[in-house]
Image 1 (cartoon, rainbow, N blue to C red):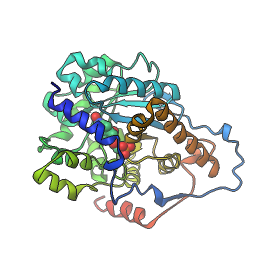
Image 2 (cartoon, rainbow, N blue to C red):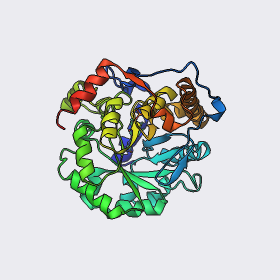
Image 3 (cartoon, helix red, strand yellow):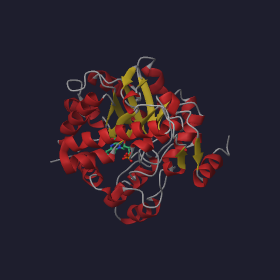
Image 4 (cartoon, helix red, strand yellow):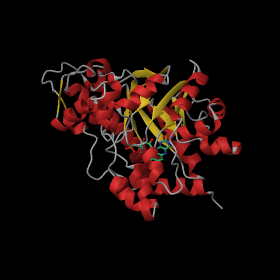
Length: 354
Ligand SMILES: Cc1cc2nc3c(=O)[nH]c(=O)nc-3n(C[C@H](O)[C@H](O)[C@H](O)COP(=O)(O)O)c2cc1C
């Protein structure tokens, strides 16, 4: 008999395999970033350098596969296939929540990917509430066991509020994060992520105080995790979920705020093209992440379609770089750009509390 958390993860996977869980009326606002094109780029596409490095690892492109939990028995296959693809392409890979491994050490096998991804950037993942309950020790031991380069802590209060049986107490989270950052020391990268609602400027202030240096914004405009839970909920939670479906900070906005707060920023939530990646880097992101489209591609055409999707993202980034005359990511980050009215209004208005 699958446990209730295994059943939940299997539901998540099957709901995310379709695009019915996207934001309905809110976008990432990446479409409101126009990079100024060059008619005289003076570049050859084969010379464009998309390489970068993070957490001591070199990457062939500013991209990672964002955290995704495999449902029950599918976890092993999903993690191994995605990690092997990341290794092949020279991009990063984040595991989904390692909570099952913390409660049942036998599940460590689901998260061990170093056999297929010996050199890739591999990150672990755990919910903030887990660290609140048990302190940093068990999570750090789990990371050591699988040989990951770091750990991402996910925050998802609105998703929990709509999730049947989800958490309702979000006090003490900042202190728990600070304790993990301290216990991790300098050798392990700790990053904090949302799961699709984005991080606000004030969240950034709190995370800075907690000692966090790297954030993954996971903003609004891609997969709506409130949408996912709404489809699983009933009664008051289902009714509230329908109202809250589009809750969140557009990814381009959250990216701009976190760059302003001097974090190393991973821009994610609705990254769907190489042009989105180019726009995120132009706004100051160090890296970008993609999640649900890879599960959808795997469902449709197996790992070869996942590979094709990722190849297309990287090719699209290169095309965009030639288009604006940027030979490398440093040049891309200083390409002149024009921001549309909604994006400018969001960015400026959200800074009110500074
Ligand atoms: C099937 C699936 C499972 C996920 N599980 C996790 C998880 O365990 N931990 C986490 O931090 N985020 C999880 N996420 C959220 C993603 O990492 C990402 O932040 C979010 O889906 C937005 O990105 P997207 O629009 O590219 O899907 C999951 C996403 C998907 C699609």
